[in-house]
Image 1 (cartoon, rainbow, N blue to C red):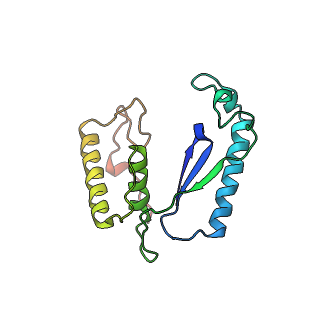
Image 2: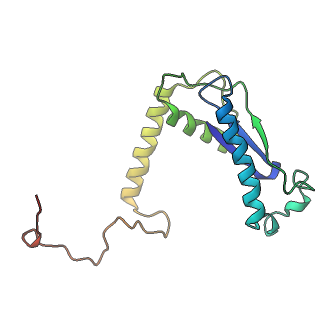
Image 3: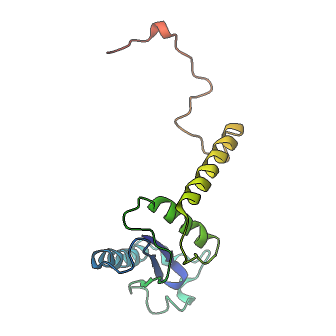
Length: 160
C-alpha cells in the first residue's frame, strides 16, 4: 500500500497494490492517519507558517483547518499477485511514476524488469559514489576518519 499526501488539496491518495477490494482494517488505519496528520499540522504550527504557502487562502483549508484530510482510494491500478513478494519493486515503481507526474499503467508491471532496472540503478549509484564519495556536505559517519591511525594487527586482542 502506498499513501500519497497532497497537502495543498488536503487529501490522502491511497494506492492499494495488493488487493482489489478494500480491507476494513487497512481503511481504518488510513482514517487514523488522516486524523493524526490533521492534528499534527495544527498542533505543530505548520499551517501558521506563511513563508512558502499561505494555507488560509487555499480553498481546501478555508474554514476546515481542524477537519480530517479527505481519503481517496485510487481505482483501476496495476495489482501484484497475492502470493508474490514483489511489494518493494511495486511501491518503488508507483512512487517513481507519481513523483514524475506520470499515470501509473493499469495493465500490470513486469516485476522481473523492475528488479533488473532497480538493481542496475543501485549499481550505477554505487559506482558514481565510488568515484565521488559525497554528493552533499553530509559526511557518512560509518566511513573512517581521514586522520585516524591504522592499528597494528599484532596489537589487537581477539576474543573467541
